Amino acid sequence: MMFLQFFIWGAWYTAIAVYMANHGMETLTHWPYSVNPIAAIVAPFFLGLVADRYFATEKVLGVLHLLGGVVMFAVPWATSAPVVFILLLLFYNICYMPTLGLANSLAFHHIQSQEQQFPLVRVFGTIGWILAGLSIDFVLGPVVGAGPVPERTALPIYTAGTASVLLGLFAFSLPHTPPPGAGQRVSVRSIVGLDALAQIGDRAFYVFIVASLLLCIPLAAYYNFTQLFLGNAGISKIQATQSLGQMSEVVFMLLMPLFFLRLGVKRMLMVGMGAWVLRYLLFAIAAPTAIFWLIAIGILLHGVCYDFFFVTGQIYVDKKSTPAVRGQAQGFLVLVTYGVGMLIGAQVAGNVYDKLLGGAASLPLDRWPSFWMLPAGSAAVVLILFAALFHPRSAPVAATPVR
Image 1 (tube, rainbow, N blue to C red):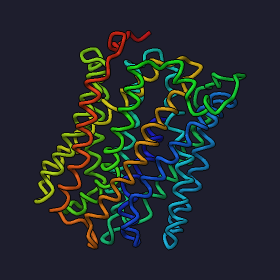
Image 2: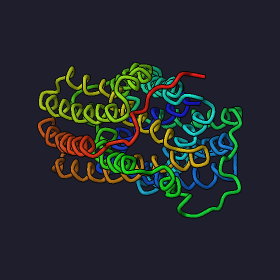
Image 3: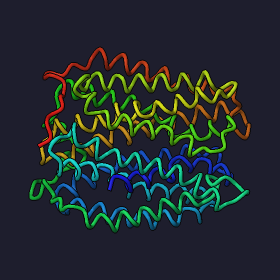
């Protein structure tokens, strides 16, 4: 499940900006990274209402992936109509983004130790993302031959659509996961996760939520513009190069149980935030002369950036939750991070990029440092505030034995 879940995302997400630029939409490349978080804001309605109350999780997961796969196959046919193109991506993401929380809640329902077992399940998602990126360059590359790089073609999009249909079919064979909130009263507060927030929230948890939202604003710049940055730096194997980040993610995911024992939640989150600051600084330093090894180190930091922030956050939220509100809580985290934070970040990054573009077809290398320093500074401010304000009442989360 996790392998296909993230293979789908990795197949199209890091290639779509290059594809759009190749079809005359170079000034609109931030929109896929805006409709994606808009869909994440809608996601709690599926998690808090449908999956938590009326239907088994695996069935909702299957239906959404089947529908999303069909929509993804239609996306390349709308390149001559940018508005329709973006609306189709919006509809696709409305199908996909709820499945992130659904996959997490299904996994948490069937394991006993979040810290010990979840990283071992989630690591297969990272492997899926890696193989998606490598397949774009080393499987689809020979298909297009000496013509355009595969990211400029519709093949990555069709690959994502095919994988989505496969996961949709496979989902119906997953372990039965009944709706934990069946029979409970339905309200807007419960659907968006506010009831769950009231149940599990304390001062430290609220600080975590606000810090997560604020950090995702500068984080959006990486997902939106790294592939364009790599292209400007003369790197031809864009997908394969970005897959270095997921390779490091595998290593750190497997080491996470040990880090939980040594560091606890607060320090792990701080290390993750600090890694984002360092990544952007490395990109800024490397940009003027396209120093590949600095760019590669920045990408390799993805294991720390993603695992220590996003995955640690998911585990922290699950440990604070009860079974009845698990889906709501995970949905609320998706809304805050992938939703509101990434939406604001995509728009900010897109507008900064357009202003620095100055009418050129692509951003000159000497202007990339100014672009990368903005998210570096923003992430540093969030890190400092989080370190000063996040004080859990209880002891840091420690790994528990596998039962």
